[in-house]
Image 1 (cartoon, rainbow, N blue to C red):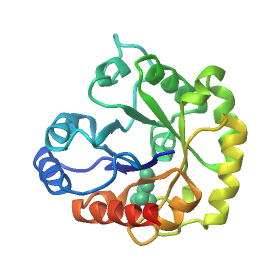
Image 2: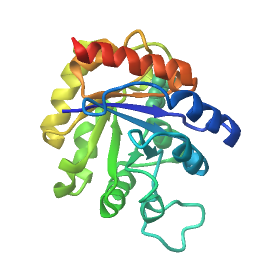
Image 3: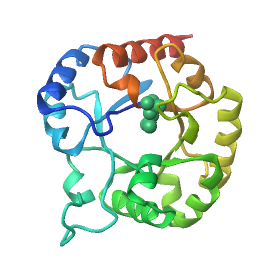
Image 4: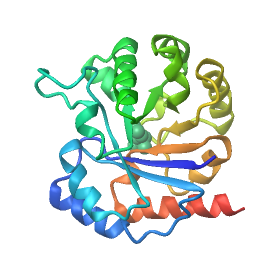
Amino acid sequence: MKKFLIANWKSNKTITEARQWAEQFSTTQFSAEKTAVIVAPPTPLLIAVREGLPESMSLAAQDVSPFTAGSYTGAVAARTLAGLVSYAIVGHSERRRHFGETHQSVAQKVTQACSEGLTPVVCVDQDYVAEQAAAIEQELLSKCIVAYEPLGAIGTGNNVSVDEVTTVATSITANFGEVPVLYDGSVKPDNVGEYLLVSDGVLVGGASLDAAEFAQLVTQAEVRLQK
Ligand code: PGA
């Protein structure tokens, strides 16, 4: 199975900064057979980043509307994103905390993403793996990538141990089936290798904002995958 390396820029960067990042990152070498490198910029910057990156790199949306296209001011429908991105992150802990997302609304986003052929990247903490899986339409569970996102590890430098990732990955596959399981929380170039030993990839926040640092992370991942 390919390893997923996802750069989540969150609510950062101007269009000029996005173009500079893409230009700087675009020369990074990696094996597209072994690794999926995916960038998730803020929605208005998607086109600028797409234009600056080679075809071998994919894009993700950081969120998607729980509704179909229509009269939902401010929402970005899966139909609008299709053709621009291949993946949609849903249920990130910051969306749950600051925007009141629930297991049910995250499940609706999974439905919308899948209806337009986007792969949902569902973020879960260990406490609600089962509840989140139960809210998602049964036949869509196998279409998800699931990111284990321990709340205390996001942006703090307090990584969880690889043993804990293994334990929670077991719980994720028990509830979702044999889906790719990613780890998410303070992943850096110097620790990505150990997480790739026990997961199918990583979601990277802070260490993805600087193109050189994310390139270094991709390079470290390649080194690990060649061993
Ligand atoms: P972090 O963020 O790498 O800065 O901890 C990860 C995320 O929230 O996706």
